[in-house]
Image 1 (tube, rainbow, N blue to C red):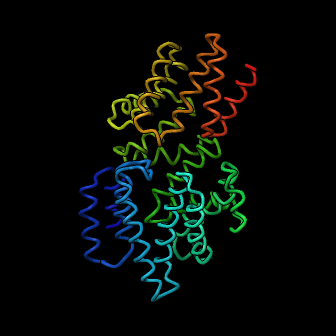
Image 2 (cartoon, rainbow, N blue to C red):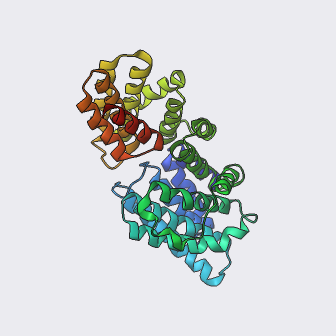
Image 3 (spheres, rainbow, N blue to C red):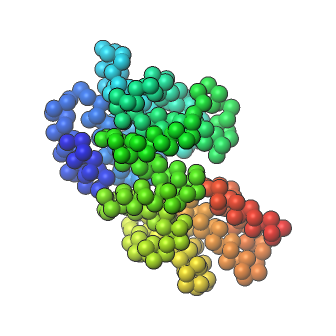
Length: 344
């Protein structure tokens, strides 16, 4: 039932997912899997979810219910791994949202609660492949996150050191051996390879798999498109670009428009048309200002290259500075800085 409900969630068939979750609740009314699946059902209606999303209040409500039901089980059985897993997952998601919003103290508070549970479960991953997911995330991001977000460096000393290589291995094992979190593990792992490790070749395996499994999932489609564009596989990228350009939601429409700009610049060498698409994508993205920083940085970098090719170095410098200010990935920041230095 969990598999079937998850398939409906990830393929954007939410009414069917809710019916499966209702059936699951009748069988397991006090189990935290029920509110956790409801939380994920709400989250996937508006990916990438932010605290400003209209569905966030419903998502958060079910995360809090997940924590409450997990704590109720733990009160009777302090070593119950399932209860710890679901409580960790809920606290971990809340920590992620607070970090995205810049609420560092709230993020650390939630992370500490997650960490206290992770410490108790790290030695039990052989008993439950689901635990590999959270252990893998911890091992990787404990080391990598402060590198990308220096403001957290003064906090992380309270957390045991991680292990980047082990974290990547654990996440891959979760993709292939877990039942509940295999899709989320694949998504996080692809994000790591794309945004942190700059290895689109590694990310492609997971994103191609996710896109084929859930072709109706627009978020998977957008991530797969990002990967194809990083690999300069423009022929396979073009149909996805055309599909997302028609999307009603600004986030996905912006993705399609900005990557269309890249295609026009790099493949068709139609620079004037590319400029229009970059600007159009930024205007579309302004309708959803708290998402899509990566796509904006792509557009600013492209507009900078076009301004530079036209000899307008002052305007090019402005665009490169905007790319650097967003600082979404090392490779974009590096290109922006190199081009800015050349101008100076």
